[in-house]
Image 1 (cartoon, rainbow, N blue to C red):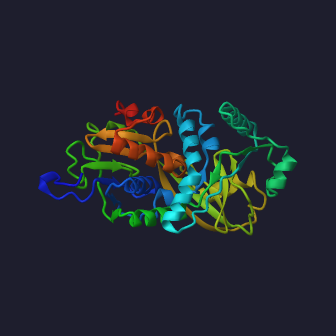
Image 2 (cartoon, rainbow, N blue to C red):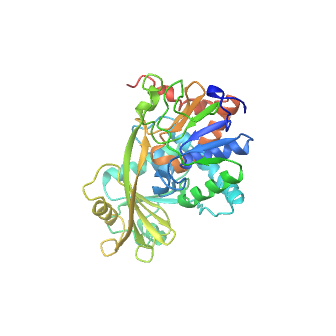
Image 3 (cartoon, rainbow, N blue to C red):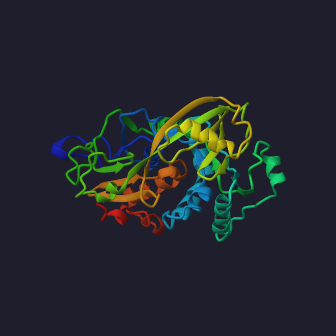
Length: 366
């Protein structure tokens, strides 16, 4: 593909990727492994951003199976990507020499009120229809698995599909693997997709928008990206010695995750006047010892979301593609997103499942 680009300038890469989060990095690595020259553009360090701020959960069951207003095929996409994660993690560790802390699960989901119990029942039913058995052990058995579960826990579920990974190590490993594969990094801000003229975009035959937001996108040219919005999330951390858990624990919208000597508690999904106090109070509902433990770290990030909580995967303009809007599932969906976009960009191959996430579904949004 290498040749002359706009105004006769030399083309630096076959594909220019905007955004160096986990989606942009995964797509860059996959394309480079298929023999494509890739440049990636982001004003920030590739190991930071929303992907850095995440907790690293790989949670198709809890996230996708229980969302009432989610895309109808989101669970299928999430389950398919979760199956790719063991191989993806192994390949990434081999390519980078960095262990990424992949744990296949299971995750323990608990409830402290009837509404949360109904959510667990919905998850069990949804996964059961797909041949995945989630056990609902008695509370005494759950407390053998996680002794710090609070007395307020009313029911629980063991979800075998849901695991975790150290997302920060994944980002480091992806950046390393990309560089070893010849991907060129540019610490530059690209202001947005400017329509079919692509005047503000890098000089490459094909563009993949993997940034969170197209901040100066033309609504006339790319109305699909106008459907996106940001959801701020805040998290806190305790020393694992103070709150010692062994699995990811989900309860309502909140969770606890063991990672690198810490126990993470997250995450807010709307503005809170005091997010640290909110998260500590939420964790107290399902974990013992939180009241007396000290917060040792806190941080936040902004998730790129769409109205149906599912990503935009596909062409958005002439020679311009998008892979964005992954909301709470960016870590989980990285492997399958990379495969879908590489198939689409290089071979014009779009599976029936991938087609369901075309940005065209929001093309009429103003």
